[in-house]
Image (cartoon, rainbow, N blue to C red; front, top):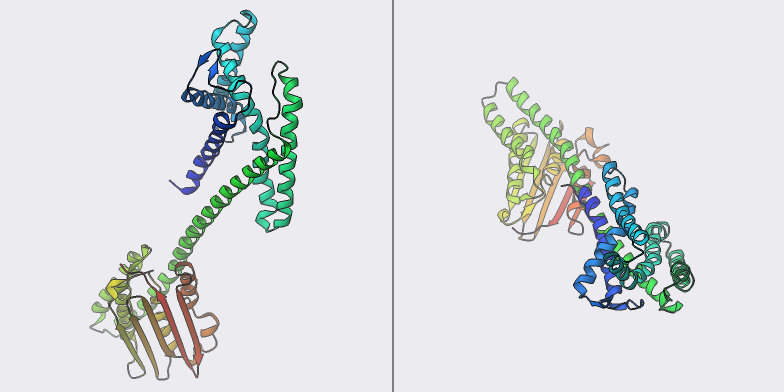
Length: 415
């Protein structure tokens, strides 16, 4: 299942879980409502029953919000809303027909008033403040690094929420429930601190979640870019080596079948082995050897001299595929001309750091383009190094006196 699908499914559940925990914390620890104890009409109940009833009430109160959910079946919305209306209709019927004598309705109503209503009303203003902060203040100010405006707005939101909460209990509750004696249990400055605590805590959780999403998106972007880079590289190598075999076939060279076999191994590596995030360093070095041998087949050894040296225990490390090969290919692409030239490639590994050094003369036809765009090799490798080995690599190259020198160092993890 894709992460985006998981996110859509679990984020609402996390929100519900957070408020459920908050609600029950207030109900069991800090509920100052009238007779907010484990007693209902003289019947003592345990906290397990109270928590269960809180869950049922919370779930019931959330049913009308099903209409706010997008892309849900209409019949499902109607069914859930009917579930919400049926208990209300039943309670109203019992109140009218039986004059409120129904024991079940009385017990539920008593529990609702004494152990649920106060906490529910108290949370309404906090929930509104939390989501206004998450959806508006953080987006408008904090995400844009406008910290001063954010702190000022968040402080104002805390004060406003505290006053609304205080007024809600001291004035409006009496109008809605005249038979109850609900007043604000907290003073204004205490309410400001409570709201501020909620805003700070939920903001931290939100920022941690956003950071995790950013890391996941960055990882996915890196994978997509690496796939695109490899897709660019693969045809490039293929065309070069097919030209080599074509030249040999035209000359009826008896080594053509041997070279085709080498190219087959080369393509197998490109198409299959490079699909993994990392491969054994030994395999990458071996493909460099194969590539150099393929290139030697099409070169005039009297004009171009090629030297490849490899030192170290390459079996002890892994490396991202196709990091070395584009740089080796770059030597042959820009270092072969009509004049005599030398290509040197040195690979060494000391158990921790991989050193890859190349040196080649610049062909006259290449001098105007080699350092400006470097073909596909150098830019692609630079991007991949930054994505895969941040702060664990260096890549230096320069042209001096007609010679192009490159040195790459990468710290590799052992197997």
